[in-house]
Image 1 (tube, one colour):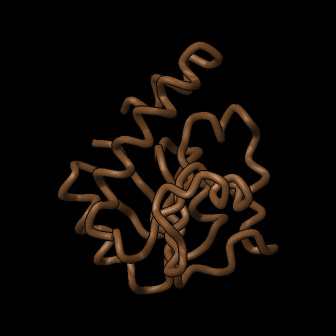
Image 2: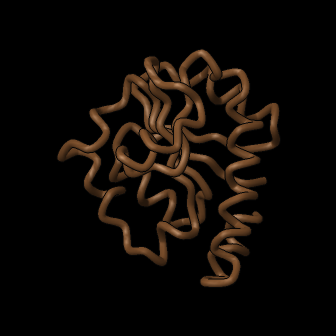
Length: 136
């Protein structure tokens, strides 16, 4: 079972359910530092929930400064109430692989599964170890 880290204060239960329904093990981290430790231990994705500390701010530096070899082997997802799911330009500007609208929380597992498959294919030629890690 692939592990996903939810960076959240206390409202991650809805996201945990959506991920569990898609076969992911979801753990909650209260800080970006803790989330990075989970990625270093094998988590394939980090989901930043709306109530998490500001993404892009000083608290998020442990994830934003991950070495490229570690970042290739995981997916960073930002859930944003005002965003449109799949908005690639805003995801690029936010330095994440996937942007998900909070209204699409019920589809989080399905969206994450598709994004992991796409990233696995993309990095497969460059970094077979990262691609293997993404496949679980």
